[in-house]
Amino acid sequence: MSDNGAIISGMYASFAKGDVPAVLAWFDPKIEWHEADGFPSLGGIYNGPDAVLNGVFIPLGTDWDGFTVTPDEIVASGDRVIAMGHYAGKYKATGKSFRTPFAHAWRFANGKIVNFHQYTDTAIVQEATIA
Image (cartoon, rainbow, N blue to C red; front, side, top):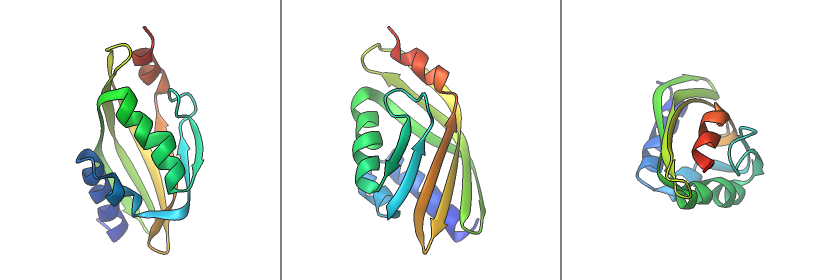
């Protein structure tokens, strides 16, 4: 695995442990983060680490019980890394659980992550949020 692949693998491990500062440390100050359209209350583009923290990470931690992001395979080539895996969790407001696959596309520049794109079946996630 390339250095960038190892960084992404380590970031997923840090996220799983709840070490969000370790994750954010790899973000370029101008990171452009794309959450899939239709992802409940999170879909859209976030610019900068603070926007990702407040618009994505904090809602995931407060709205969901046991939300996990588990990479099953990481493929790296130069400044690009693709991670394929699955999400799982239980939406607190409904008590409904879900599990769905994802693909994450990461891009590096100057040793930092400058771009992220999420691809997932948002309909499966939305089903968990509907009473």
